[in-house]
Image (cartoon, rainbow, N blue to C red):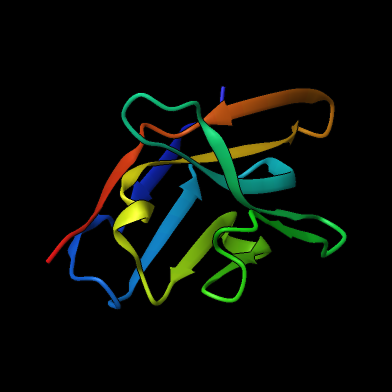
Length: 120
């Protein structure tokens, strides 16, 4: 088990910005990939952005050019910079991480979710 601590959500006006962060509590966690998913009421959870240990990134088409994912490997932390926010970005955002603990045990962990609300 790896505990992921999320922060940075809140209420913002359309066109505004937020920065989400997610930190893995286990220092022995060697991250393979970290990413952000979101789920709006009545909809399925969807991938927002993903970054891998080899530097690959993936973004949902709806956020390309507006959101940027980055990571600090030394801190086992991933960030999501969200700019030009739209009402349709409103959702609960979940951090996800997978990798090896103590170099041998594979884990796939989820954060508790943080609410992002974009409204005027």
